[in-house]
Length: 199
Image 1 (cartoon, rainbow, N blue to C red):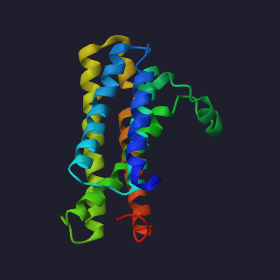
Image 2 (image 1 turned 90 degrees about the horizontal axis):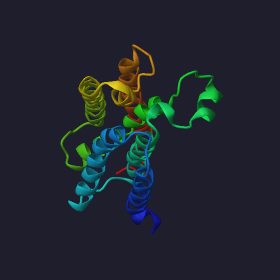
Image 3 (image 1 turned 135 degrees about the vertical axis):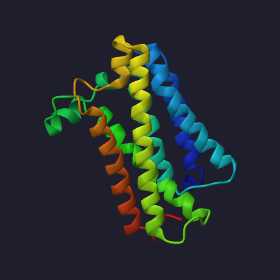
């Protein structure tokens, strides 16, 4: 029963979080900028489910980590999310919440692999894995372009908060690296456990 309704439960948690985090955010313009892309992503997951394209429970869990984190980041701005426990644990001087979020982008590699195999679009697992990693890399670059465009368009505190570089001139490159690293690790784990729950 839990396995059957896990996607519904994850969606319900997201909706509650979305409503609560939408109350008095640090910056309403940043809240819109951070949440609109994620809302579109969640709607895409719902649409695929409605079209009877179902992923493994592990894929759904991994896919919802990013919306959960992004919604929190939209409320506080990623730079100001209370994340001291993690930063202090590893000795980071900057807030690493956004970096962890970028790593979570790579988790979508599993859903991409499952989709390719479900639709029999590839004949070999290594092709599905390679495609998923390249797809995540493309999304990573495209999203950095969006951040750059928003920062240029809005400027000021709102633009800087959305960009989230925290003074690091290599922020975009590090974010893209973590996106891809997340996809590589997720894909590697898929190859190791492919005979388990994953379809």
